[in-house]
Length: 263
Image (cartoon, rainbow, N blue to C red; front, side, top):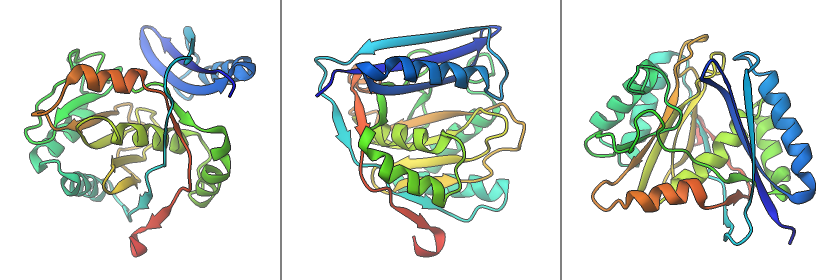
């Protein structure tokens, strides 16, 4: 098997993050992947960046964890308040207390960083109390080293076509959610994109799948972020962060899509 590399892009303007993405590719595809990520950064709706960082990291010596994608659930969510009710309901069903779910949702839609803006990474939240557990409230928890296996294109493309996805948001979010759902002491995840014109969010858990929810925020809103809910009692935070940052994950397998009427 060819040696695999993580190719990561992060772009910023005025010190503010504008876009980011990652691919896991063999060595002969590094240049192509890097060029594609640079193009994405330059054409992002948040505007042309002042700085683009490309990081290429060998994954040699690391065991590649291969995971099947979470099943995808599409509820009916015609309005913002309904979407938020669905998100809280799905989190509670996954094992998050209603209080913790509401605390995290309010933080995301109003700015979860100590300065009141978006965090660079995710909140780490106790699923029972809503207590914030991330060591750095600005930096948060970053999930890295995750992508779809090359052979997974035959599985993810039909799902994207069925859902009329014209951007990479869905495939990237599903891969990340699949990795996060398999983290130590993971309970669930809540995510709302910080892209101003991408209003879809999701709730994900290993038990129930990836619930893709439309209209999680108003169009044009720049707030967004994610919360990883965990069981604090048994959590080894160093193990958790190590898994999220360092364990390479390739997602592959059939992408099951269930709509509300046949959930």
